[in-house]
Amino acid sequence: MFRHVVLFTWTEETTDEQKATLAAELAKLPGAIPEIRAFTFGPDAGVNPGNQEFAIVADFDNVEDFLVYRDHPVHQAAIAEHIKPIAASRAAAQFVFQA
Amino acid sequence: MFRHVVLFTWTEETTDEQKATLAAELAKLPGAIPEIRAFTFGPDAGVNPGNQEFAIVADFDNVEDFLVYRDHPVHQAAIAEHIKPIAASRAAAQFVFQA
Image 1 (tube, rainbow over the protein chains, first blue to last red):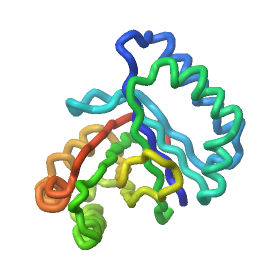
Image 2 (spheres, each protein chain N blue to C red):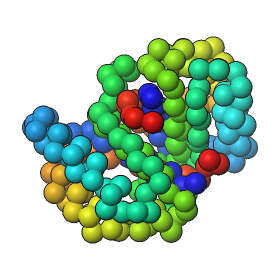
Image 3 (cartoon, rainbow over the protein chains, first blue to last red):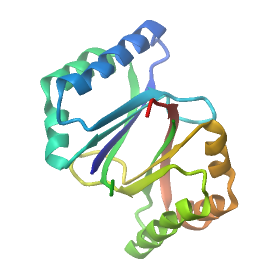
């Protein structure tokens, strides 16, 4: 399997409404992009200090399916409309793992 | 489920041997810490520019089990001996998801 991980912090001006809208839009992605095998996301649980504020972990059968997701217009629209306006920082990686 | 995500970059001086040793030590954690429900990790696949260099995603039944892992001496030894000597940066988050 091919796993995509991304962590965000948000700008100080980010509202709860913007965060809720993002979560609602992210929840639509698995229905719009059938290459997604598993899709999890959520705000940081607040257990550890110094954490990022939001995480997404998405699984695919292989790198080709990840690239379909990465470049998919529905995903790109979510990034442009709901992530970029509120993101202060982004950290990401993709890696292969045995399911 | 409770998901722990951490991304690292390594110092320029980090050797392939240090990276291989870290992977071998991480692979031992699920056997040493029974609270771990799923444990995946690996070097960045090199698909996207600007990524972090290494990712770990670990799943637990709940936050209490995550805390057992976080504070477990075997995990803390792996951090002290195999991560801190080579880490240039660290970004992490934990979040709740529906399995």
